Image (cartoon, rainbow, N blue to C red; front, top):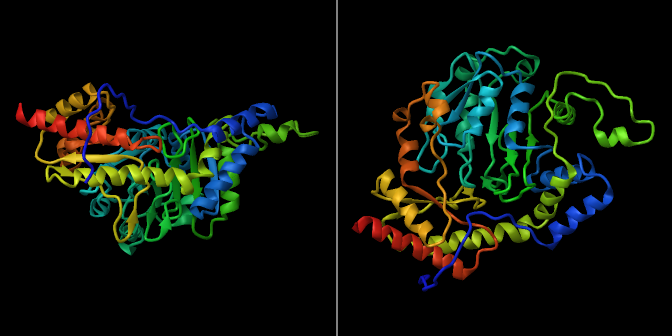
Length: 414
């Protein structure tokens, strides 16, 4: 048992970046090289992602959102097309769909925060072109169940391809929103090779960060040529230009062409350097330290039946401990909010992941109603995300646990 200890005036941030001497050295090396936009560091980071996940090709971009927009455009998604997503995710999942002119079809989730595959099947119609499940807090979706739905003959018969890539695939495209789950496992496979396309976020608060950034993992089936699709997506990230800035800078390489209307969403080397230093020690250090924090929380909160622990490991899944999404049983949303205030007063920064999208103004104005997503609302109304990162000490973890327990007792007894 972890027994909380009395500590006064402690301030604990929610998710500071992990910046050590290796990160500083890698960034310094980039600055001294004279090359800070897309170049050799990006290529090295892509190689590290391939090694970590086992995926054949990985293409870095400047955010998860831009990566999703790029992939949707690459697949020809546009006006009238539908993309099935969970209601319980960050808004970027749906906003990427809206940005290409398509319709986000939101469905409810199951108790572990992830999308309900039975709801996916019910939502599929002749306009459905993409299913985009979302891993939450580092916990992977049930990908076998999702892919079984997509590959059903009855579902394939509804598919109406309108572009060459859609015709080549011959079914709904599966994109994994793996913003939270780099390093997680599903049935002994790394997230990154579980669907046609996986997109990681490398945002400042993620397990591996490039300050801002994302990476597209390409796992398309035949007859796609993955090497060629990688080249196409890299072109897409650079305005459809056939040469990146590094290639153009080489002797005689100034002449270029614009092959199609692309986006400008490439990752610069100065950002890639941060992620490069981190990912090289991800398995050996960063992930183990996140697990240490998560297990310490588990050992404390499992003593109390009014706390619902987040899933960390099961027979077929293993989290990468991106968030510690604690739920409190039998409390209301307003009580949860009051509990957050109590914890914050003790100097501990916490968060909520996530406000379901149908509760946000932009989606309410489009006609989405949270009453249609009862499981999403239930999870949201009782959830508090606790700090979890490698720098947390045992003393700080104990203080966080104490603050949550004392806050709960205060809220319930008031």
